[in-house]
Length: 71
Image 1 (cartoon, one colour):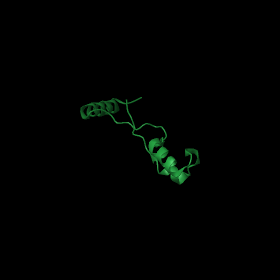
Image 2 (cartoon, rainbow, N blue to C red):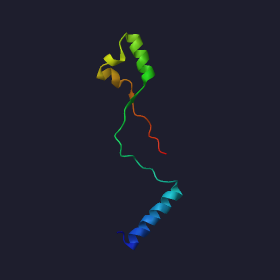
Image 3 (cartoon, rainbow, N blue to C red):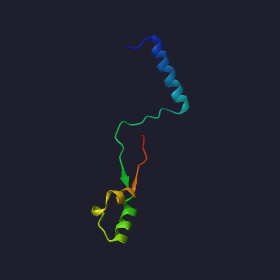
Image 4 (cartoon, rainbow, N blue to C red):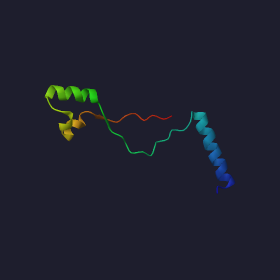
C-alpha cells in the first residue's frame, strides 16, 4: 500500500501528464516486422522469381518497422 506522500507524488505526476497532453506508453509487445509488398512484387516480377524464393538478404531490402498506433 502506498503512503500518503507516495499518493501525493502519483497525483502530481498524473496532473503533470494531463497538463502536458497525456501519457505516452510503449507497449510490451514484440517488434513486428512488416514488408513493402508492392515493391517486393515489382522486384520479383523484374527478376523472374517467386516471393517465396527470396533470400534473407533480398527480404531485408523490403523490411520496415510499422508505426506504433495508440488508441
